[in-house]
Amino acid sequence: MQINKALQGFKSAFFQNSIAMNLNLNSYKHLVAPLILLAAALLISFNFLAFAADEYTYMNTASAIARGNYADAPELSRFPLFPAILSVFFAIFGTSEIVAKLVNLLIALAGVVILYFVARKLFGEEVAGIAALILATNPLYIFFSSRVLTEPLYIIFLTLAVYFLYRVKDDLKNLIWFGAATAFAILTRYLALYLGIIAVTWLGVNGQLQNVIRSKWLYIGIIAFFVVLAPWLYLSYAATGNPFGFIIEFGLRQAQQQGVGFGLPDKIPSNLLAAPFVIGAPLVFASFLLRREIRDKFMKNDAIKFLLLASIVIALTLELAGFFRPSLLRYIAVIVPFLAMMAAFIYSSVRNERIKIAIFSINAKQILFAAIAVNLALSLGLIAFFGGYGYEKQVAYRQAGLYLKDNCNSTYGNIESVAQFYTGKQPAADATGAHCLAYSFYDGLNPSIPQGFAEVYRYGKVAVYKK
Image 1 (cartoon, rainbow, N blue to C red):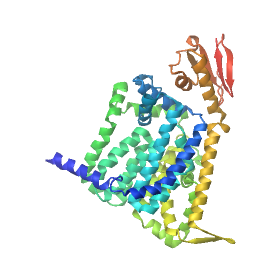
Image 2: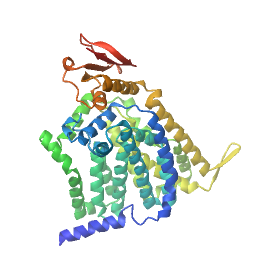
Image 3: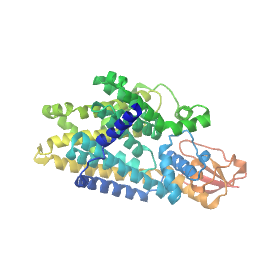
Image 4: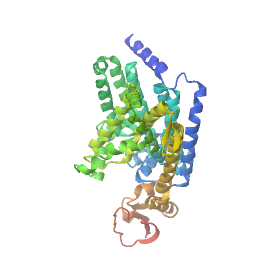
């Protein structure tokens, strides 16, 4: 009987609180402009095929899964969900750069749709449409979506997890969905562990923590969490003898690559100072908070307070991590959906007002359109710069990889993930058994070339040698 009641509660939580239920089809019109603008920007990025080392790792892992040979994956311990999704498309359409970019385009579009539905539930139709527009034209969101990186997928599950956590105040059954969404977020990026900090902080601030701890739904949510993680924990146990071995192994490898040491004070504010600016030009709407009536309306809204707290916790968590390793903007960029909803909320409060600047008079809608235009211009600039015009290293990797594909039977060197993706073959065990050597001289690298090999190709600071 208890099991039946739990199942009934689970079904009730889904049908009553799912962000996708009971939507009027006419509401989709507010998604048209955001989706078209995002799709157009990302399609432009297909003219710039250049990839970073992490992207080759994800594509190689996906290719190995698609072939049914997971052991060939370059890093077994790296978060698996994104390459697993990518592998499905590789299995159907073949392994290629275009397929990989198309997958992230689709994920990015889905992220905008998810944000729209979440914002619609929290704030209503108008805020939802503006928030979707702000996210779809955000420079960092567009840039990461134009690459083969995990950020767009992670943003989906982070947004869902935060939404279901907020809805716990209405129905404790949402703890089930929070647990599942958190697990999917962790499978996309291990950084999602900070969702636990957000949950404890928010529930504690609102006096809900004791009720949640005593609720059976917390423990059903924990079960949902581990059910989602179970396949990954099993693979980790089979490979390392520890269900959490992959996470530990990944952390140790990152520490070795990045170096671990107590950060100097001048690098500590990086995440906290950068956090508000990841939204780009729509940050201008924050200036309206200087007006007391707007600020009071902003801070009296429970959903806004929750999004603000979640953003601060993420920034502070990464700030503490910054003491021990370099900070990366991509880690803090995932709060863009939260900032987009906050900016859209402010916009909805001032949309009918006119603002005088010197001899000019403009309204909030004109400010919004100008901010969107600035963000789109920044987005295209980022795509062009890192896609080739200003970032030679990644172009050199690709050109060398294409040469290896057409001219070498086996390879060895310090760009093994690049060679593996384009040739479809595992690298040779050492230089003596390789037909070609491929070495990068970027980032201060100065590899020694074995005797008997001569340079046959060079692009930038990447060279290929043959016997």
